[in-house]
Image 1 (tube, helix red, strand yellow):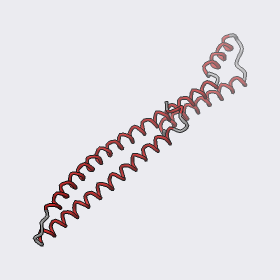
Image 2 (tube, rainbow, N blue to C red; image 1 turned 180 degrees about the horizontal axis):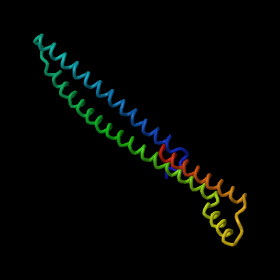
Image 3 (cartoon, rainbow, N blue to C red; image 1 turned 45 degrees about the vertical axis):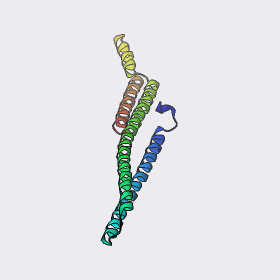
Image 4 (cartoon, helix red, strand yellow; image 1 turned 90 degrees about the vertical axis):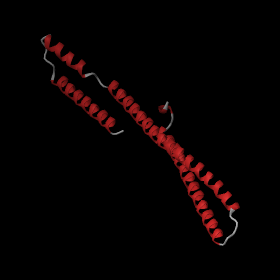
Length: 161
């Protein structure tokens, strides 16, 4: 699925950063709501010290506290959602990288001559009385070396996605 898209890592990063931006906005809303609560509490205390009626402000304070609690709950939910998105993003990117590395290794390996085929050819020549030529030996060593390099390359790619 991911391999068919142009760059899945970019798409996943953009989605993750959009969630983070939403998280920042909700945090700002919680902060503003808590600030309004504190201001209302200060106004109530000030009015009580002057002996004024605070019923209307106390009603606003109750509503404000409900709003703050709702925002805090939404913030907690969104933080969990962002964490899940981050984990899923990392897993999908790792899968995509592993898939690409496997495809690349398969492509490289399909283009190379199998070293066991060369060894079998040399063994057949030796059994038939003809020794392998120097050129055949050099080709065999070169092919084995290339296979070793490919193996090391694929191993490194899988270790560092």
